[in-house]
Image (cartoon, rainbow, N blue to C red; front, side, top):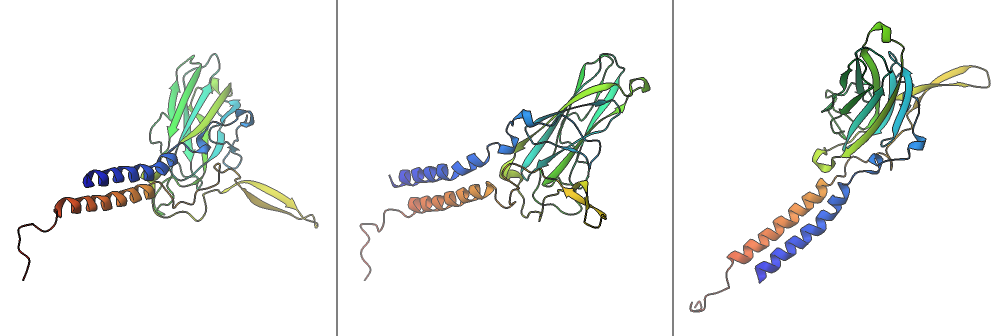
Length: 270
C-alpha cells in the first residue's frame, strides 16, 4: 500500500507540472491566421523599401518579370519560419526559373532547412510555387556563426533565368509567412541585447533654418505580444518534473529496501 501511494503521488505531480509545458508548446499568436483585409497589396523594390508583412497574413503584389520584390517580417526566438510564395505567370511564356531568398536583419542570406526555394516553370505553366523553411531562430549565437537570430527578416522574390522575349511581362505574386513554435528543445542560454531590426528607410527632416537632415527609421514590425525575454522556455518545467520524479524515486527505493524494522527474535542488546 505504501509503494502504491508513492507511485500515485508521483504520477499526480508529474501531470500537474507538465500542464504548463503543454500550454507553452501550442502555436504562438503570431503564427495564427490574421485578418487578410489589412494585408499589403504591394512589395518593395529593395531592402530599404521592403513591405512589412505580419506572420499569418497573405501579401499580394503585381509586377513584371525581371523585378525584385521585397517583403519583411519579424521572427522571435524559438520560432521556425516557413515562407511560401506563388507566382502567377502570363498565359504565354517560355521556360523561366524563379527564386526565393531570405535574409536576416544583418542581411545575411539564410539557408533553407527544407523546401523548394528555386523552381523552374515550364513553357505555358500557369503558376509556380516556392517554399523555404528556415532553421529555428536562436536567442543567442556566437559572432562567427550564421545562426538565425530574433529580429527582422527580408524576403526577396525574383526570376533568375528567362528569355529576353519574356522580360517585362506582367505577373502577380502571393506571399505568406507562418511559424512553428519549437519550444525548449531549441532553447539556448543567453539572449541578444536588442533584436536585429536595422534601419529600413530614410526620413528627411527640415528644421527652422531650412537645413535638411536624414535619419534611418527602424522597423516597426514585431511579434504579437512583443519580443521574448530569451531566458524562459518549457525546458525549465521539464527540469522541475525530473527533479520531483527523482526525489520520489529515492523515497520509493528507501521504502522498498529498509524492511519492516527490527527482527522479532533478536535479543535486545545488553
